[in-house]
Image 1 (cartoon, helix red, strand yellow):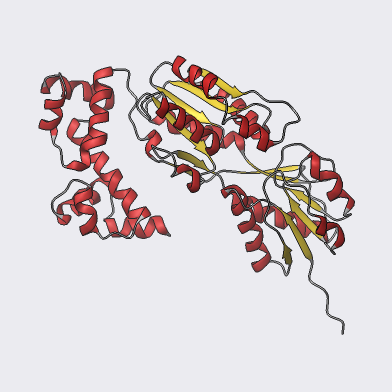
Image 2 (cartoon, rainbow, N blue to C red):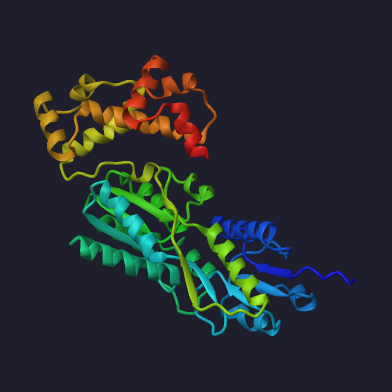
Amino acid sequence: MRQKSRPRIALLVEASRAYGRELLRGVSLYARTQADWSLLHQEMTLDSEMPEWMSNTRIDGVIARVDTHTVKPLRALGVPIVDVRCNRKFSGIPQVETDNQQVAELAFEHLWERGFRRFAFCGFRFASYSDARLHHFRKCVTKANGELSVYETPGKPNDTLTAIEKAGMVDFKPLSEWLLSLKRPTGLFACNDIRGQQVVNACRTLEMAVPDDIGIIGVDDDDAICLLCDPTLSSVRPNAERVGFRAAEILNQMLVGTLPTEEIEYVPPQSVCERLSTQVVAVEDVELARVCRFIRQHACDGINVNDVCEFTSLSRRQLERRFREELGRTPHEQITATQIERVKQLLRETDMTLEQITPKAGYSHKERLSAVFKRETGEPPGEYRRTKRG
Protein backbone atom coordinates (compact mmCIF):
# COMPACT_ATOMS: atom_id res chain seq x y z
CA MET A 1 0.00 0.00 0.00
CA ARG A 2 1.30 3.42 -0.95
CA GLN A 3 2.10 5.52 2.09
CA LYS A 4 0.35 8.88 2.32
CA SER A 5 2.80 11.78 2.16
CA ARG A 6 3.07 14.14 5.10
CA PRO A 7 1.54 17.61 4.62
CA ARG A 8 4.25 20.19 3.98
CA ILE A 9 3.51 23.41 5.84
CA ALA A 10 5.46 26.59 5.08
CA LEU A 11 5.95 29.09 7.91
CA LEU A 12 6.43 32.68 6.81
CA VAL A 13 7.11 33.96 10.33
CA GLU A 14 10.13 35.89 11.58
CA ALA A 15 12.36 34.48 14.31
CA SER A 16 13.99 37.88 14.95
CA ARG A 17 11.37 38.90 17.55
CA ALA A 18 10.18 37.18 20.68
CA TYR A 19 6.58 37.24 19.42
CA GLY A 20 7.54 35.51 16.18
CA ARG A 21 9.59 32.89 18.01
CA GLU A 22 6.64 32.14 20.29
CA LEU A 23 4.37 31.81 17.25
CA LEU A 24 6.75 29.26 15.76
CA ARG A 25 6.89 27.40 19.06
CA GLY A 26 3.10 27.12 19.12
CA VAL A 27 2.95 25.82 15.55
CA SER A 28 5.70 23.29 16.19
CA LEU A 29 3.94 22.09 19.35
CA TYR A 30 0.78 21.42 17.35
CA ALA A 31 2.74 19.69 14.59
CA ARG A 32 4.50 17.42 17.10
CA THR A 33 1.46 16.49 19.16
CA GLN A 34 -1.63 16.82 16.97
CA ALA A 35 -0.56 16.40 13.34
CA ASP A 36 2.07 14.71 11.22
CA TRP A 37 3.42 17.74 9.40
CA SER A 38 6.69 18.56 7.73
CA LEU A 39 7.45 22.19 8.64
CA LEU A 40 9.37 24.42 6.21
CA HIS A 41 10.94 27.62 7.54
CA GLN A 42 13.90 29.89 6.93
CA GLU A 43 15.33 32.78 8.91
CA MET A 44 13.64 36.06 7.98
CA THR A 45 12.56 39.43 9.32
CA LEU A 46 9.01 40.72 9.74
CA ASP A 47 8.78 42.51 6.38
CA SER A 48 10.69 39.94 4.28
CA GLU A 49 9.39 38.99 0.84
CA MET A 50 8.08 35.49 0.24
CA PRO A 51 11.13 33.28 -0.44
CA GLU A 52 11.50 32.04 -4.02
CA TRP A 53 11.75 28.42 -2.91
CA MET A 54 8.11 28.51 -1.83
CA SER A 55 7.02 28.89 -5.47
CA ASN A 56 9.12 25.90 -6.54
CA THR A 57 8.33 23.52 -3.68
CA ARG A 58 5.33 21.34 -2.95
CA ILE A 59 3.48 23.12 -0.18
CA ASP A 60 0.13 22.08 1.25
CA GLY A 61 -0.56 25.01 3.57
CA VAL A 62 0.91 28.24 4.93
CA ILE A 63 0.95 30.04 8.26
CA ALA A 64 2.27 33.53 7.61
CA ARG A 65 2.63 37.10 8.77
CA VAL A 66 0.60 38.22 5.75
CA ASP A 67 0.76 41.78 4.41
CA THR A 68 0.22 43.62 1.13
CA HIS A 69 3.65 42.69 -0.28
CA THR A 70 3.20 38.96 0.37
CA VAL A 71 -0.50 38.28 -0.07
CA LYS A 72 -0.44 38.02 -3.89
CA PRO A 73 2.45 35.50 -4.18
CA LEU A 74 0.98 33.53 -1.27
CA ARG A 75 -2.42 33.32 -2.98
CA ALA A 76 -0.67 32.14 -6.14
CA LEU A 77 0.39 28.99 -4.29
CA GLY A 78 -3.25 27.89 -4.32
CA VAL A 79 -3.16 26.43 -0.79
CA PRO A 80 -4.91 27.28 2.52
CA ILE A 81 -3.38 30.26 4.36
CA VAL A 82 -3.74 31.43 7.96
CA ASP A 83 -2.58 34.96 8.84
CA VAL A 84 -0.95 35.62 12.21
CA ARG A 85 0.01 39.23 11.53
CA CYS A 86 -3.47 40.72 11.15
CA ASN A 87 -2.21 44.04 9.85
CA ARG A 88 -4.99 44.13 7.23
CA LYS A 89 -7.91 41.91 6.33
CA PHE A 90 -7.63 39.75 3.21
CA SER A 91 -10.72 37.91 1.95
CA GLY A 92 -10.63 34.17 2.35
CA ILE A 93 -7.66 34.23 4.74
CA PRO A 94 -8.60 33.59 8.39
CA GLN A 95 -6.64 35.39 11.07
CA VAL A 96 -5.54 34.67 14.64
CA GLU A 97 -4.48 37.70 16.67
CA THR A 98 -3.58 38.76 20.19
CA ASP A 99 -6.55 40.47 21.84
CA ASN A 100 -5.37 44.08 21.90
CA GLN A 101 -8.33 45.21 23.98
CA GLN A 102 -7.24 42.94 26.82
CA VAL A 103 -3.60 43.99 26.31
CA ALA A 104 -4.57 47.64 26.82
CA GLU A 105 -6.75 46.78 29.82
CA LEU A 106 -3.93 44.85 31.51
CA ALA A 107 -1.50 47.74 30.94
CA PHE A 108 -4.00 50.28 32.30
CA GLU A 109 -4.86 48.18 35.36
CA HIS A 110 -1.17 47.69 36.14
CA LEU A 111 -0.49 51.43 36.04
CA TRP A 112 -3.67 52.25 37.96
CA GLU A 113 -2.83 49.80 40.74
CA ARG A 114 0.52 51.56 41.19
CA GLY A 115 -1.24 54.82 41.89
CA PHE A 116 -1.02 56.59 38.52
CA ARG A 117 -3.98 58.82 37.72
CA ARG A 118 -2.48 60.59 34.70
CA PHE A 119 -1.63 58.55 31.66
CA ALA A 120 0.26 58.72 28.39
CA PHE A 121 0.50 56.55 25.29
CA CYS A 122 3.50 56.39 22.98
CA GLY A 123 3.10 54.51 19.71
CA PHE A 124 3.69 54.28 15.98
CA ARG A 125 1.14 55.93 13.73
CA PHE A 126 -0.22 53.59 11.01
CA ALA A 127 0.99 50.45 12.79
CA SER A 128 -2.29 48.55 13.19
CA TYR A 129 -1.42 46.99 16.55
CA SER A 130 -0.43 50.42 17.92
CA ASP A 131 -3.65 52.02 16.67
CA ALA A 132 -5.72 49.26 18.28
CA ARG A 133 -3.91 49.48 21.61
CA LEU A 134 -4.29 53.26 21.71
CA HIS A 135 -8.01 52.99 20.96
CA HIS A 136 -8.65 50.59 23.82
CA PHE A 137 -6.26 52.32 26.25
CA ARG A 138 -8.06 55.62 25.62
CA LYS A 139 -11.36 53.94 26.51
CA CYS A 140 -9.88 52.69 29.80
CA VAL A 141 -8.58 56.15 30.73
CA THR A 142 -11.86 57.84 29.77
CA LYS A 143 -13.88 55.36 31.84
CA ALA A 144 -11.68 56.15 34.86
CA ASN A 145 -11.99 59.93 34.28
CA GLY A 146 -8.21 60.15 33.88
CA GLU A 147 -6.00 62.39 31.78
CA LEU A 148 -4.36 61.01 28.62
CA SER A 149 -1.56 62.48 26.52
CA VAL A 150 -0.61 60.80 23.22
CA TYR A 151 2.52 60.85 21.09
CA GLU A 152 2.89 58.89 17.87
CA THR A 153 5.87 58.76 15.53
CA PRO A 154 4.83 60.30 12.20
CA GLY A 155 4.53 57.86 9.32
CA LYS A 156 2.78 57.09 6.05
CA PRO A 157 -0.10 54.63 5.57
CA ASN A 158 1.88 52.40 3.20
CA ASP A 159 5.15 52.35 5.15
CA THR A 160 6.42 48.94 6.21
CA LEU A 161 6.37 48.23 9.92
CA THR A 162 10.16 48.13 9.88
CA ALA A 163 10.25 51.64 8.42
CA ILE A 164 7.65 52.88 10.91
CA GLU A 165 9.60 51.50 13.88
CA LYS A 166 12.92 52.81 12.54
CA ALA A 167 11.40 56.29 12.46
CA GLY A 168 11.10 56.00 16.22
CA MET A 169 14.90 55.92 16.46
CA VAL A 170 15.29 59.36 14.92
CA ASP A 171 12.42 61.36 16.42
CA PHE A 172 14.27 62.08 19.65
CA LYS A 173 13.63 65.83 19.70
CA PRO A 174 9.82 65.82 19.33
CA LEU A 175 9.57 62.77 21.61
CA SER A 176 11.68 64.56 24.24
CA GLU A 177 9.60 67.72 24.05
CA TRP A 178 6.46 65.65 24.57
CA LEU A 179 7.94 63.74 27.52
CA LEU A 180 9.02 66.99 29.18
CA SER A 181 5.49 68.36 28.78
CA LEU A 182 3.94 65.51 30.79
CA LYS A 183 2.78 66.25 34.31
CA ARG A 184 4.39 64.04 36.93
CA PRO A 185 3.78 61.34 37.95
CA THR A 186 2.40 59.79 34.74
CA GLY A 187 1.86 56.16 33.79
CA LEU A 188 2.97 55.59 30.19
CA PHE A 189 1.85 52.72 27.97
CA ALA A 190 4.20 52.07 25.04
CA CYS A 191 2.66 50.20 22.10
CA ASN A 192 5.41 47.54 22.23
CA ASP A 193 8.77 46.87 23.86
CA ILE A 194 10.68 48.49 21.00
CA ARG A 195 8.84 51.75 21.61
CA GLY A 196 9.18 51.30 25.34
CA GLN A 197 12.95 51.00 25.03
CA GLN A 198 13.06 54.21 22.99
CA VAL A 199 11.06 56.02 25.69
CA VAL A 200 13.26 54.69 28.51
CA ASN A 201 16.40 55.82 26.63
CA ALA A 202 14.93 59.29 26.08
CA CYS A 203 14.01 59.60 29.76
CA ARG A 204 17.57 58.73 30.78
CA THR A 205 18.98 61.39 28.47
CA LEU A 206 16.50 63.93 29.83
CA GLU A 207 17.29 62.86 33.42
CA MET A 208 13.63 62.06 34.04
CA ALA A 209 13.21 59.55 36.86
CA VAL A 210 11.73 56.21 35.81
CA PRO A 211 9.49 55.00 37.40
CA ASP A 212 9.05 57.90 39.87
CA ASP A 213 8.24 60.62 37.33
CA ILE A 214 7.10 58.27 34.56
CA GLY A 215 6.18 54.61 34.96
CA ILE A 216 6.58 52.78 31.64
CA ILE A 217 5.07 49.52 30.43
CA GLY A 218 5.46 47.93 26.98
CA VAL A 219 4.06 44.86 25.21
CA ASP A 220 5.60 41.53 24.09
CA ASP A 221 7.75 40.75 27.16
CA ASP A 222 10.78 40.42 24.87
CA ASP A 223 13.56 39.82 27.38
CA ALA A 224 16.20 40.66 24.76
CA ILE A 225 14.76 44.19 24.82
CA CYS A 226 13.23 44.54 28.30
CA LEU A 227 16.43 43.55 30.10
CA LEU A 228 18.54 45.91 27.96
CA CYS A 229 16.52 48.85 29.28
CA ASP A 230 17.78 50.79 32.29
CA PRO A 231 15.66 50.49 34.34
CA THR A 232 14.39 47.16 33.06
CA LEU A 233 11.07 47.40 31.24
CA SER A 234 7.76 46.04 32.52
CA SER A 235 5.71 44.47 29.77
CA VAL A 236 2.40 42.80 28.93
CA ARG A 237 3.10 39.21 27.94
CA PRO A 238 0.90 38.02 25.05
CA ASN A 239 0.17 34.35 24.51
CA ALA A 240 1.83 34.13 21.11
CA GLU A 241 2.45 30.41 21.53
CA ARG A 242 -1.31 29.92 21.81
CA VAL A 243 -1.81 32.12 18.73
CA GLY A 244 0.54 29.85 16.77
CA PHE A 245 -1.08 26.67 18.11
CA ARG A 246 -4.58 27.93 17.26
CA ALA A 247 -3.46 29.00 13.76
CA ALA A 248 -2.18 25.47 13.21
CA GLU A 249 -5.50 24.01 14.37
CA ILE A 250 -7.40 26.20 11.92
CA LEU A 251 -5.03 25.33 9.06
CA ASN A 252 -5.44 21.62 9.78
CA GLN A 253 -9.20 22.03 9.46
CA MET A 254 -8.77 23.88 6.17
CA LEU A 255 -6.59 21.08 4.81
CA VAL A 256 -9.59 18.75 4.98
CA GLY A 257 -11.97 21.32 3.51
CA THR A 258 -13.50 22.82 6.67
CA LEU A 259 -13.54 26.61 6.62
CA PRO A 260 -13.48 28.57 9.92
CA THR A 261 -16.72 30.25 10.97
CA GLU A 262 -14.96 33.47 12.07
CA GLU A 263 -12.74 35.76 10.01
CA ILE A 264 -10.55 36.57 12.98
CA GLU A 265 -10.01 34.90 16.35
CA TYR A 266 -8.58 36.75 19.34
CA VAL A 267 -6.29 35.16 21.94
CA PRO A 268 -6.09 36.80 25.39
CA PRO A 269 -2.67 37.92 26.71
CA GLN A 270 -1.17 36.03 29.64
CA SER A 271 -0.12 38.58 32.25
CA VAL A 272 2.04 41.57 33.10
CA CYS A 273 5.70 40.91 33.77
CA GLU A 274 6.64 43.65 36.23
CA ARG A 275 10.18 44.98 36.17
CA LEU A 276 11.80 48.12 37.53
CA SER A 277 10.15 50.59 35.13
CA THR A 278 6.84 50.36 37.06
CA GLN A 279 8.00 49.25 40.52
CA VAL A 280 6.80 52.39 42.22
CA VAL A 281 4.00 53.82 44.30
CA ALA A 282 2.93 56.91 42.40
CA VAL A 283 2.07 59.79 44.74
CA GLU A 284 1.52 63.51 44.24
CA ASP A 285 3.33 64.35 47.51
CA VAL A 286 6.80 65.36 46.29
CA GLU A 287 8.60 64.64 49.56
CA LEU A 288 6.85 61.29 49.98
CA ALA A 289 7.80 60.33 46.44
CA ARG A 290 11.42 61.24 47.25
CA VAL A 291 11.32 59.04 50.35
CA CYS A 292 9.80 56.14 48.41
CA ARG A 293 12.59 56.44 45.85
CA PHE A 294 15.18 56.34 48.67
CA ILE A 295 13.58 53.21 50.10
CA ARG A 296 13.44 51.51 46.71
CA GLN A 297 17.11 52.27 46.09
CA HIS A 298 18.41 51.32 49.55
CA ALA A 299 15.97 48.85 51.16
CA CYS A 300 18.22 45.94 50.23
CA ASP A 301 21.22 47.68 51.81
CA GLY A 302 19.69 46.90 55.19
CA ILE A 303 18.27 50.35 56.03
CA ASN A 304 15.64 50.85 58.73
CA VAL A 305 13.09 53.54 59.53
CA ASN A 306 15.72 55.61 61.41
CA ASP A 307 17.76 55.83 58.21
CA VAL A 308 14.68 57.02 56.35
CA CYS A 309 14.02 59.67 58.99
CA GLU A 310 17.57 60.95 58.63
CA PHE A 311 17.07 61.22 54.87
CA THR A 312 13.83 63.21 54.95
CA SER A 313 13.01 66.66 56.29
CA LEU A 314 9.80 65.23 57.80
CA SER A 315 9.55 64.29 61.45
CA ARG A 316 8.95 60.64 62.22
CA ARG A 317 5.34 61.37 63.18
CA GLN A 318 4.77 63.30 59.90
CA LEU A 319 6.41 60.53 57.92
CA GLU A 320 4.27 57.81 59.48
CA ARG A 321 1.09 59.85 59.01
CA ARG A 322 1.76 60.62 55.33
CA PHE A 323 2.60 57.01 54.60
CA ARG A 324 -0.64 55.81 56.15
CA GLU A 325 -2.74 58.49 54.44
CA GLU A 326 -1.23 58.12 50.97
CA LEU A 327 -0.10 54.49 50.83
CA GLY A 328 -2.02 52.70 53.56
CA ARG A 329 1.16 51.26 55.06
CA THR A 330 4.06 52.24 57.32
CA PRO A 331 7.61 53.09 56.21
CA HIS A 332 8.76 49.78 57.75
CA GLU A 333 6.18 47.88 55.69
CA GLN A 334 7.36 49.72 52.56
CA ILE A 335 10.96 48.64 53.24
CA THR A 336 9.87 45.04 53.78
CA ALA A 337 7.74 44.98 50.61
CA THR A 338 10.69 46.25 48.57
CA GLN A 339 12.99 43.60 50.04
CA ILE A 340 10.51 40.80 49.36
CA GLU A 341 10.10 41.91 45.73
CA ARG A 342 13.88 41.64 45.33
CA VAL A 343 13.85 38.14 46.82
CA LYS A 344 11.05 37.11 44.45
CA GLN A 345 13.04 38.35 41.48
CA LEU A 346 16.15 36.44 42.49
CA LEU A 347 14.16 33.28 43.15
CA ARG A 348 12.51 33.50 39.72
CA GLU A 349 15.49 34.53 37.64
CA THR A 350 18.53 32.88 39.27
CA ASP A 351 19.66 29.61 40.85
CA MET A 352 21.09 31.39 43.88
CA THR A 353 20.54 29.68 47.22
CA LEU A 354 18.58 31.42 49.97
CA GLU A 355 21.86 31.85 51.83
CA GLN A 356 23.29 33.72 48.84
CA ILE A 357 20.11 35.79 48.42
CA THR A 358 19.90 36.83 52.09
CA PRO A 359 22.53 39.64 52.08
CA LYS A 360 21.30 40.89 48.69
CA ALA A 361 17.91 41.51 50.27
CA GLY A 362 19.33 43.38 53.26
CA TYR A 363 19.03 40.53 55.78
CA SER A 364 21.71 39.01 58.02
CA HIS A 365 20.17 35.58 58.59
CA LYS A 366 18.41 33.35 56.08
CA GLU A 367 16.08 32.00 58.79
CA ARG A 368 14.75 35.50 59.44
CA LEU A 369 14.34 36.17 55.71
CA SER A 370 12.52 32.86 55.23
CA ALA A 371 10.11 33.65 58.07
CA VAL A 372 9.35 37.17 56.74
CA PHE A 373 8.95 35.85 53.17
CA LYS A 374 6.42 33.23 54.28
CA ARG A 375 4.54 35.77 56.37
CA GLU A 376 4.29 38.23 53.48
CA THR A 377 3.59 35.78 50.63
CA GLY A 378 1.94 32.82 52.33
CA GLU A 379 4.54 30.32 51.13
CA PRO A 380 8.21 29.57 51.86
CA PRO A 381 10.89 30.72 49.37
CA GLY A 382 11.51 27.22 47.99
CA GLU A 383 7.83 26.66 47.22
CA TYR A 384 7.59 30.09 45.57
CA ARG A 385 10.53 29.21 43.30
CA ARG A 386 9.00 25.85 42.32
CA THR A 387 5.64 27.46 41.59
CA LYS A 388 7.00 30.28 39.45
CA ARG A 389 9.31 28.03 37.46
CA GLY A 390 6.55 25.54 36.79
